[in-house]
Image 1 (cartoon, rainbow, N blue to C red):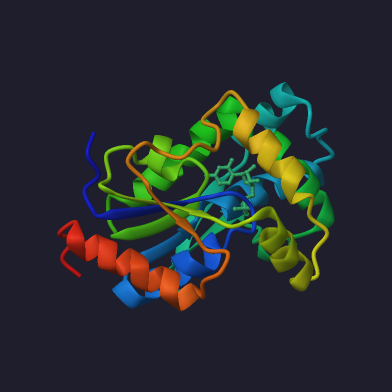
Image 2: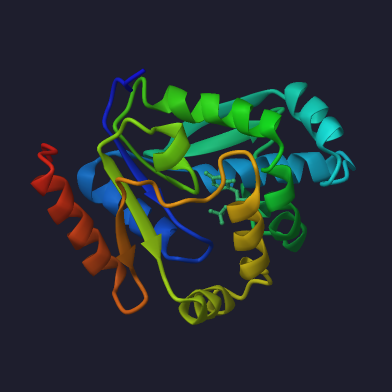
Length: 216
Ligand code: C5P
């Protein structure tokens, strides 16, 4: 089914610069910004808070099914509340960084979150970033981008943020899982951001969107 509103999909590996690019792009276009990684992180935090082992898929599915997941908007950005708790301050905790790839590989978790992601497009034009947005969540959108950067640059970016985050391990897990892995969608435009500023990557995307006829 084709989405009611325009969707720009921005996928890529960890620390490729896609969040900064997606946020800036959404602001420039006046589209809603949705960070799907933050949704998987919020669920991971929730299951860890409930003492669930991140390798126990059955209990993870059970815990997520019984949670009340509310998606809301604030300053044109999506926000997720779980059982009325806002986990925003914990999304980058070490244990969330460590567990998120395992939790997000559980098919039921993906099913529940993908339904929420798709529902945003019923009411808003979106820029959504993630791993499988162009390949799986919105395969029919004509606007797909894959932002990459060299492993050295990505490591450097994470270190500059002061985070302990095994990005190579996450990328391996995200690319090899069975349920909608990280892949480059066939019709995605690939941009290597290693040597470019956010502004120039956003400029390239806007140029490409105009070429494709998006009225912006
Ligand atoms: O984008 P970010 O690095 O915050 O994503 C955290 C994790 O969430 C990823 O490593 C991946 O395991 C999961 N994720 C996913 N599908 C998405 C977005 C994120 O599986 N669309």
